[in-house]
Image (tube, rainbow, N blue to C red; front, side):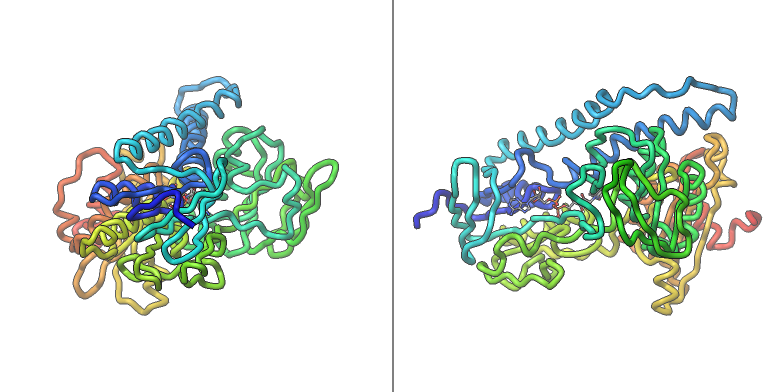
Length: 467
Ligand code: FAD
């Protein structure tokens, strides 16, 4: 069959990985086609992930801050919620960004094809569009088909009261009682939103701490503050059964910390995401997919089939938008004949909870497990003028150094704006900064960012009177 479309590069999926890869490739002169099954570009991140969640978290933070000011002499009325308007705000934020992407694609002459794509050979992809099946013949391809939330079979998914993160972001209502299954980043961000809007939220986490990837000390301030806003955070506990009942979703638990509540108006299941590797006909292109649906790649993001690249969530952890974007740029550059490699030393992780939790590089736990000789400089925000001034002293900044070289290998921040503060640590690790470089960098006063320089000084021993 003759192809309907021929191109130098086809990109499957238009999330942060896909659109970044397509745009960079087009900028480098490749004739590029972007395939996306949904009507809007932007993937999970823009449509049902990073962006809408942060718009709702902004509302939650404003409510929280207004409430907290009562203790300091400024009292606002009880927040009045117009849920339709809040939903509109979220939709307008998403709309602005996804429309922007469509414009950027056009500007670069990236052709977009809306439909579900599947490889049919190493150089051909079929796309099922509203106007029928289109055959694309390509020289090279980038797979950026992303991931989807894990749907635990114990839950009655045909009942709309059981939601994944996409359902929770739709915000059909503010449930009286909400159960959040999974105390990872996504579960806790949504718990933060719904608790601020007035739901009675219960969080159940199977592991022995929330956000299990982060150091235990880092999540403590969050556990404490969020713990005061929700009905309970239950660790080492899991939901074993969930049934749709007349009064709500009835759940059964197993574990060390069984919640009192067993019937919920809504249940959010946020227990992780699984890659879409098995749904794209990869085998017909000869691309190897692991049992779990991931696609392995080398440092140039090439799969086992050298002219087919893969990027983003589908190639593995961490499943984060900024990782997808950087991988995309490398894949596009390699496809255009450049000698690029993905060699980021570290990729930061952020939970946009309240307080925010952010970390990058080696954690203390990892250092211990791997027997790395590290030293820690920790600056508690109780000693930060700025943190005191905004009445948010629960945070801290922690830097982790290689004991031999005094070079920073990792770091973490918990507190207001931790997600923004972590960038300096990521840069420091990438640049191979030593403790002295950070300590001698003049940080503006009074800022939370100063805590980074102070933590380096703690490590160096030039600040000694904190504890
Ligand atoms: P995706 O964004 O998953 O995009 C893949 C695209 O491919 C989708 O649009 C999909 O429709 C399309 N597709 C798949 N198969 C086909 C097919 N066969 N044919 C056509 N199209 C197809 N990350 C952060 O860094 N920061 C955050 O704050 C953050 N918050 C999040 C909040 C939530 C609630 C969720 C769910 C995720 C969040 N993430 C966050 C993770 C982030 O969304 C992902 O890491 C990121 O979207 C991955 O990008 P990607 O390009 O690999 O894939």
